[in-house]
Length: 413
Image (cartoon, rainbow, N blue to C red; front, side, top):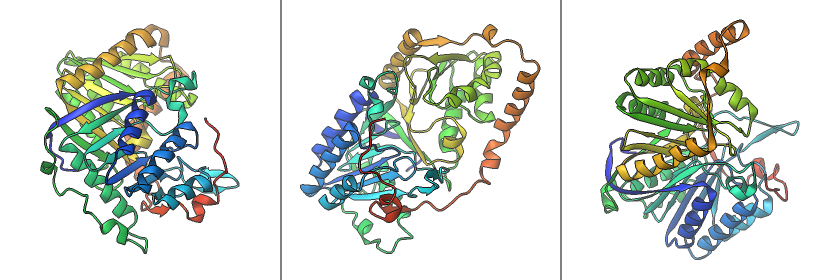
């Protein structure tokens, strides 16, 4: 990651699995040299099986394929699913294979939550969409609303370089490390990729080392710089005090700040947590819209007429202080206009605005709860650092920690 705005890129917004999966599978099917893929969730349903098919086909024609899954997010892949990938030549890596105690999952902190694909070092995808059928509208009322972005241009080299570094760092404690030293496809600098468009971009990550708050910091910068409007659509919303403070300060400057949050959450606790902040936000002039069509899983935002972000990072304690995340920050009028249009349509057609009068007065238990919530969000980045911070490690997917907990089949969620 260069840390500097990189010009000359083209960004294509992809909404939901209906737009995302066909493009990713098409690019993998056309890969000539290399595919690097990271995902939090890979299920053995029709989406996962389609990915399985195109990855095997790519590996069999000589493409170097590396797939990294999270051990907690993807614990139940069958031995047959993994074996057919590895036999074809796909290198499967598991981030901290899941540990089970009395049949229940443990070790859920500090997960690899990124969703990245890089094909031939020339095309990249970054976003919040996992590989599971519940990202398709045909899955019914539980089908998730989400976004990703397809990238062409010099920024892809930054993302490509990052994925190779993640593989190298994750395996640095393993004996057999020679495979990552073959970097004939790794481009040495972003300038080696020719311009593909006029958009500027940044690839921003959060980890538990040198980039503890990079993604949140870019949100705060966007709020401080905004002059007209900010729209944030985020699935799991319970941000720190600094971010809430910037939202309220932006409103006082005359900025229209709108939040799109879950109205039909996949987990009830999500809405309960977010609603604890409603009094403070609405009192400060922030508009809150609850998306009611189906579960919202997106992590996107726009500011004024050029800035936008798409990625994997929620605005909650897990994403902001524990998980490994990645977002793309974009400066481009055309992309901003497209994403803004979709978010505005969502607010208009599929959301209900939360009004101040429906919240009632803060008194009794609500007042006590508000007091503790306020101080919690002021302090949690500090106390989160006390939670276990293990060294992230990748393991071959055929190791016992993964295979011993796998089922022979995985039903669609």
